[in-house]
Length: 126
Image (cartoon, rainbow, N blue to C red; front, side, top):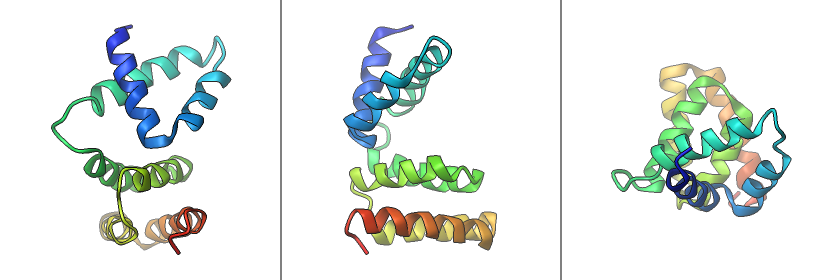
């Protein structure tokens, strides 16, 4: 594994998702899951988030739309929190959910709104 890519990814992952969350996930990794955690940190966060072509806020909005489209709501919740960390506003989260609704259907948008409300309430935004 490219140590530089992993370290860059680790920094980006912690900045978005929070150091405590990331360290907890890495500490919970065992021989079975550790290789994936390391590869995902290097590839997704080091390669995918590690350049300056897009700012973290834009990447977070893209993630909300794509993960929402996939219906992976546990990951959507994690990335909704991360989006707030990256400066995404409540109004921008709502706009991203509208895009999910338009392209993926009203039921999926409703799921995103349910999860967003929970995250926003926890953050004191609602």
